[in-house]
Image (cartoon, helix red, strand yellow):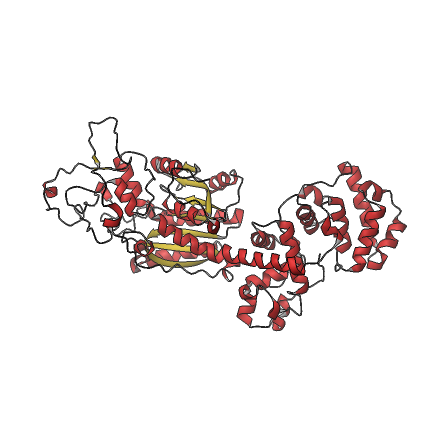
Length: 574
């Protein structure tokens, strides 16, 4: 939930999306504010600065921890994320960048902060290994993209590529995104390899803002001036509306000069980059004082109710290092568009298709886990058709419970399933019923691992029972689902002989069905792949999601010409 004092608009219908992310080197939370406004939710944040963490937890959901990300073992960081009980879909962060900054006139050859960008990549790789991320976003100074550091940046991008991401790079200026400040920053956006062809990432373009220093900070009362003798400071108007005492003679009249220490802002222009090294806060347009920290926050695009914690120096550091939230929101929205808005549009179309054209089977009208297990056994290696319906209804009528079926004669059950072929399924059904009675007290277990310990129950059947009984929201993966994912996402390689055992396909199917009722979504996909996205004669011209299909857009209007490697094997459809 958003705190009442945040000052950021609550998510609208457009921003109802709730994508969990991890924030590294989070600072006071500018990057996270932008992502939250676009429908993302930080589940874990970390920064070395105690004051930045206090600021973060005061203004955003209190998920930030003070951690030295440079020295804490990566496995410990992964474990901390795991304890949140959420699986992050992305990682965002801005590792310290002073060693590359043009404003740093005292660069050290072996500045340890230069290694933090690679530390960020290392942590992202570990989190991706654990949670199969969809994306990452890294922010840094624009100078990192200059020829001087090109080799370093290319090495960093190679690390992300090795971790499993397709990386895009762009220098973005905050002034093009409703921020009254000239602030060029480098962004690296990585999309998971398997999603990159579908989610073809493009940076937002933006346009030059009409906001100026005057429209942003004019009309505020005089700030309070810092005095060392004050033990307890009371700052009226806003807790951060304070600044350094204007003692220099250069503040007298209108004589403030330009330069690093006395850079004066112009009322009707944007501010130069808010980067105040050694408390060298820019001079107010009046020339009589320096900006207050509150005014600097507004020039960074923070909401008026945002409050920095710490002493004056600590607040200067935080506001200087922060990412402007409107720029962060633009990046977040562009990630959302390609990864989640497209996916959600496909989900809507498939659910609408199922509402019109969906098939009706008796097992779809029950949530009884035993009856669903019976249907699963009958449908193995068999298409859903009238003969299966007849056998299912006969079994459920005569042997309604596991105890009933466990006592049935094998010969009687064989007569029922004989029209389907593979009469050994009668023996398997009775063995399954006996196991439920003897091991589980006559009740089908509602745990995936326990289900798979029953005879004849594999990955697909376990997931199907849990989803179709509404016990657990989970994706199901069979040959039909595998075929759809390969076509839609443009995956390479042959379809696996047993797609339900493919962890990669399960992860992708989970992503594809996320945020929906898994029962409805899984049934919709099965109906769609049975009638439209079929193995050898796909109805591309009538396909409601063809505009999103990578294989169709890359191979033309008719996928009847697609290679055998992408054609499905098997006929199972539920």
